[in-house]
Length: 296
Image (cartoon, rainbow, N blue to C red; front, side, top):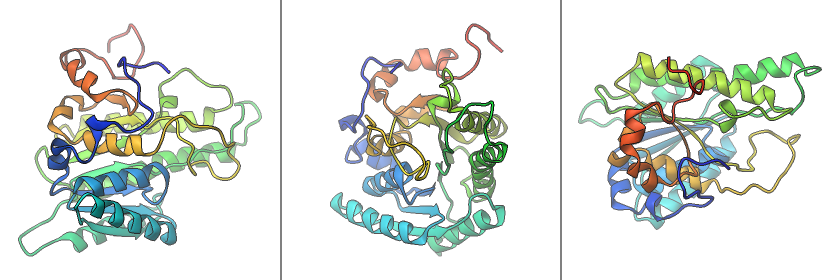
């Protein structure tokens, strides 16, 4: 795969480990919300934040039993790292604004102390779906529009529900789980998923410009075989593990990653090499999607 760094990872590695003091310090005291947190990549992200010692980690999803199973794993994994975060599960339909509002307000109520207001510091917008593949000509229009609706509306509802509960100043962080299909060369028969994630990514770009104090990063999590697409998606041998984007996501909270605000990254890229190229990333349009050769 093309890479911005010479090293390209398929598995977690020491620089993004939750046991690193810098990563533990970044997670400490943070209240984290992960949409689609019951399975797959969202589950791995939630576990990584629990391992790193976040104050609380809340996971949202449609299936209560999967959320409960993941919550038990989060508790066990956190304990192995000597941590005991508040773990919250909320059943919510991300396509329904009232449902998302109620879930996030419930989370805030559960973590609030008598010392004063408690904010939802980090939102990981991860919920989504991948439909059956097919060509533009002859594809089912209803499936295409439902995919657009879910992959855009779930993120739209999540950020709208989150912003009023986020910390003031420059403390709020939005991490958007995207895909290389949103910006890469088209792959035949995968158009419905790709256009929905491209629309999602452009919406998050607008959100970032409209909310300049919020730290926003979008990233490609890797090539991972999860339940995202349902039973009709083909099973393939995927090179990457869910733990890679999980731990990478927590690393994005560190001070050394602050220069990546409003950038698009791949979780596979080596973080130490990214830091070494900081001046290049900050001073140019590197890692910003657009038309090559055209500056707007």
